[in-house]
View 1: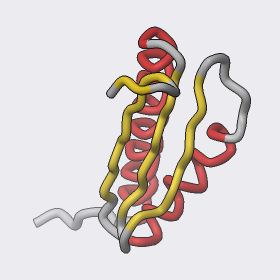
View 2: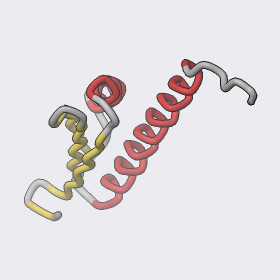
View 3: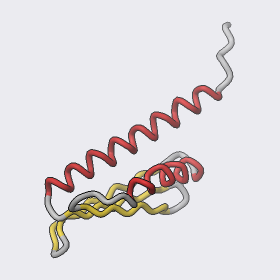
Length: 95
């Protein structure tokens, strides 16, 4: 959406549980506080299992770069959590 302050995108991520959403938000918040040229980012917990990432940029190039970065970090966090959960499962017993 275009507006006086630039372009905005909102990512709404649902996680399988509250603890997972807390971990994702905690992983993204330090990055959102960093100064990124032409872009501001806000990370919020929403609902019991949601995380919202709101990106505002002065131009479409900055918005595209920020979106690609945050989508990559979200994907990495989700894959990392899946690997950790798999490692905690007991090994399958042969039949």
